[in-house]
Image 1 (tube, one colour):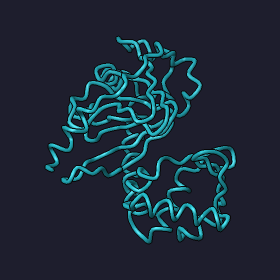
Image 2 (cartoon, rainbow, N blue to C red):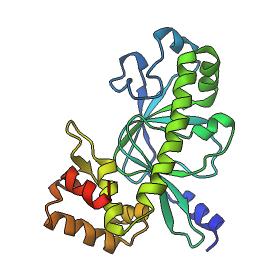
Image 3 (cartoon, rainbow, N blue to C red):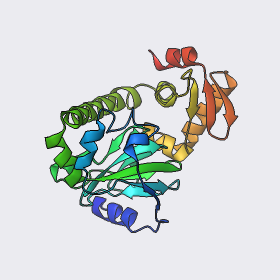
Image 4 (cartoon, rainbow, N blue to C red):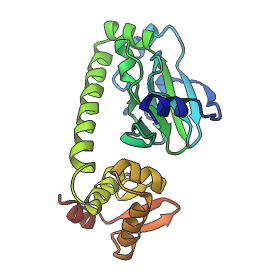
Length: 244
């Protein structure tokens, strides 16, 4: 199967349409301190000609596809989104993860088509911002210009970390690094994982190998399952396995 055909097949799958949950109120946003408009003052928001809409996506739904014309960028308010590229045989490879506060589709600001397919790994809430408004704000607001530079910088750092941490070393080390990467919460010891197929696609492992390693971590007390795909992590033990 050609790479082009693989991408076409992925884009022609039928998914439930996202639900528009209304217009976003950036002044009252509960995660404003971590999203793109974190440093914007109320006066900056008057330059928005079009309202920012919020959309809710179900698990497995795409936000946009590789090659689509980029007319908007998306900030992740809740959930986790995978960045997918397709190999010539049609299999997927996850090349990045976006979490709360991340921005998807920054390349659209340069007039480029989207470089990845973005698929929600869990129920996800996003804000959609049309590129014309962001480009206008970049000229009017020094705050947004700085924020965008930081987002580009973070994207480069994430790509470097992806290569050095999740694509090198033995399988157990890569798995430990993934748990540490996903660990969140007040004590940063809680990790919400996703399907074994997606874990394998992140780490370059088969789903069976991923399941075997996770089962071993549970037996050894490195992780403790709290609920479906929710784990409490022993960060010290994981760091030792990861080689940190």
